[in-house]
Length: 321
Ligand SMILES: Nc1nc2c(ncn2[C@@H]2O[C@H](COP(=O)(O)OP(=O)(O)OP(=O)(O)O)[C@@H](O)[C@H]2O)c(=O)[nH]1
Image (cartoon, rainbow, N blue to C red; front, top):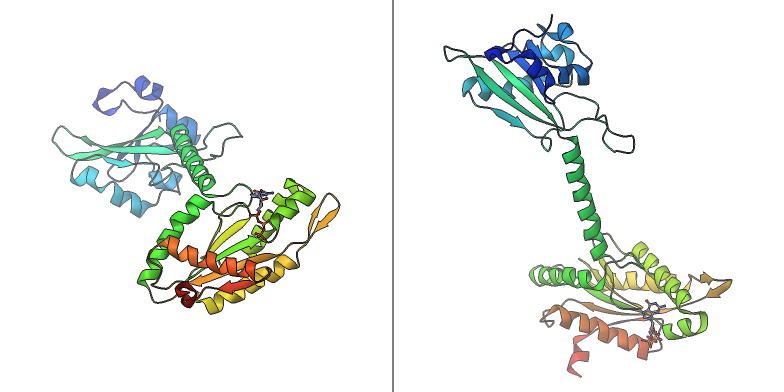
């Protein structure tokens, strides 16, 4: 059976010419009109579907959901919109895009409109299916690009750790949290010993490799919830959240030992390096994030003064001295 003369006498040629899917369903969801767009994308001719329940041909359309969704069309005589962000498609059609494109199924915006009889009753409704694959993909592509840009703006290119600016931003939040909650957090500064000598002896590229090696082992030693950043050239800052200094020293010791035991190979040469660390558990003496970090830095200075390749813990009595 061909499409019958369309309701409201819209010529069938027009309904077929339009690049939008047009389906008319009666109140039992039996197909009355099935245009060329639907025929082409579903590979179902009008004569094979007209008179049938739509659900018999499209198992992807959940009958219960469809009946509820189209309710306002009958009850309120108002249109219903389904956008691709809510549901990628109503009819599972191929996207017909080049193979390089990452969409296999068409993205659709769908409108359901009531078709009101001369006596004012709604006995049937029209479903319009718009192929919005291109818009959807470009919007998704933009969103992905934005995510990548956001990540890139937070991460240090050499090490993959947070860069200083972003680390500071997060540190300020950690400071506020530490002030509010009872579980203590510890700030840790890490600095490569005699790094200038590494650069002078083996070259800047070798120095970069040492920085990368240290960053990699810091990542291995801290928890996902900890905040590790590259603070300066060969200086790293870490916030061990929910860790009193007694736990943080275990982490510090692990990083220190691993650094000592991790030789870096560069152009046939083996570079050995050590690190010094400074730890400061949050205390209410620290009136600002910077003050807290300065305490860790002070402890780091003690490690350097004490002979390097060690960690030191900030104590407030030191402050009074
Ligand atoms: N290769 C490399 N070197 C860097 C980078 N950023 C800073 N540096 C170098 O790191 C060195 C830091 O030297 P100093 O601050 O004098 O300290 P140090 O030699 O590590 O000595 P101590 O910290 O006292 O043990 C300088 O030579 C900087 O040029 C970087 O991204 N890559």
